[in-house]
Length: 56
Image (cartoon, helix red, strand yellow):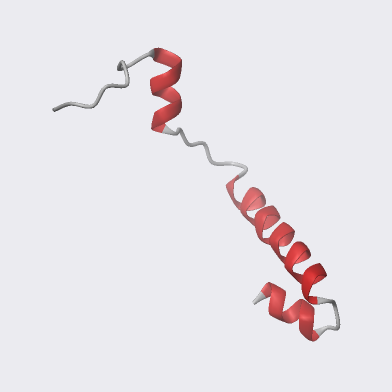
């Protein structure tokens, strides 16, 4: 909806896509700035929780 509204306001398709993508990411950053999350793969690399071999 962001990109469509920018095109409707007269911006080019490319500018609308770039700006819409930026605004979408910025909104996510604002919403998530007070939240903390962990990606399991990062823990595995940091603490060597397994050797990377899958269990058969």
